[in-house]
Each structure stands twice: as structure tokens, then as C-alpha cells.
Image (cartoon, rainbow, N blue to C red; front, side, top):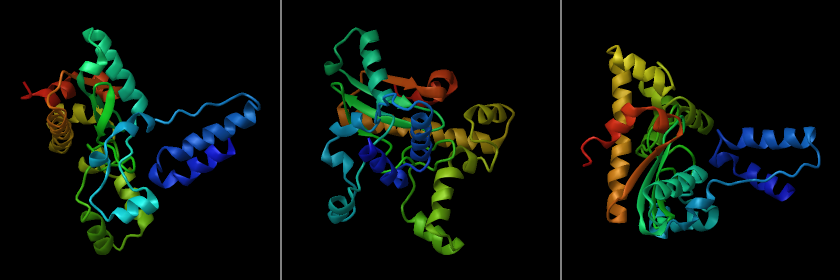
Length: 244
């Protein structure tokens, strides 16, 4: 509906890498296939069960009331599916399980799924938090933003470009690649820039796994999915090393 489209456009600033192409796809489809119903599936929906203690940030509460600044989470359709599939494989009711799902790709997030519902997730208000990603910075000290803006004389649009499009694998590796496969290849050749980038990535995964295991009071299964999670046995091994 027009109302939904307007809402999507209002949220562009929260998901600048995702909403514009999604909106474009909807509009082009309407032109090419007029009258064909389109269904919007919002991957934030799965995370609506996150408790207040996990979704609120330590900033003045008035900003939550005024702008709804809070943790929303993303990749919900993926986390929901793989958690349920893990329960099927384990042949146990999902409502009796504590599962950590790791969606690892060019964009990544990790979610704590307790008794079948999301109780915390690494992505937050926007799509840039959590572990480092292809070009996104992941968790950083908020003080870094005004510091860089002052030192480099950056506008809001410029700092957004840095944290969304020039950081993560690409930035830490000093421009080698935003593709984990390229970094693995270069690391195997002894490139220290690629090696350090992979180390930051896998350390971040391990840290979130540990935090969510603590939050849930244990863990029954750790699930890896998406391009890196499914296809990189090295990443899975490195992320789980020492967790026994």
C-alpha cells in the first residue's frame, strides 16, 4: 500500500544500504506487473520479542519516546528459520532449546534464540552494529564518530559513508577486499592485513556467542548460516575454538 511505501521511505536513514534498492524493486515490479499482489516481509519482526533491557540504549529516554531509538535487529527471517531447523535436526521442541544463530555474510548478525523467540541480537538501531562486515564497521566506541568528524572535518553523509561503505573487511584490510574469500586466500599467502581482519571478525563472533550463552544461561546449539557461515569451515572452527 502507499502507506507501507511511505513508511519504508521514512526508514531509509536506518537502513541506507537496504531500503533504497528494495523500494526500487517494488516500484519497478508495480510498473512491469501492475495488479500483481506484492507481500512485504519485514525481517525485524522476529526480534519484537527482545526484552526492554536488551533493546534500550544508555542515552536519554526521551530519544526513545521521540524517535524510537532502540535495538531493532535484522536478518529475522534467517534466524527464525535456522533456529527452527536446528530444533528439527536435534529432534527436540524448540521451546526447550537455547540456540545461538550466526548469520554470517557480507552483512552479519548473531542472535540469541531462547525457547523459540529472539531475546537479543547484534544488529541494532541501524544495520551497522555487531561484528565487522564486508564494508560495515560493526561495534565501535561512539566517541570515535565525533572525534573523526572533528579531525577530518566530515559531514554526516561522509561519516555515514565511512562506517557503512568503507569499513569492515575492506577498511581493516586496507582495501584488499570486502569479500571474505579473497581475505582468506591472501591470509593463506601470509598477508598480515588479511590475517588481522579475519582475526577481528572471528573474535567478534566468539565474543557474541559467549555473551549470549551467558544471557540465556547456557546454549544447546550454535548454528551458522549465510554465505560465510555456511561455506567457510575455517570461520566456523575459528569462531568455536576454545568454547568447549
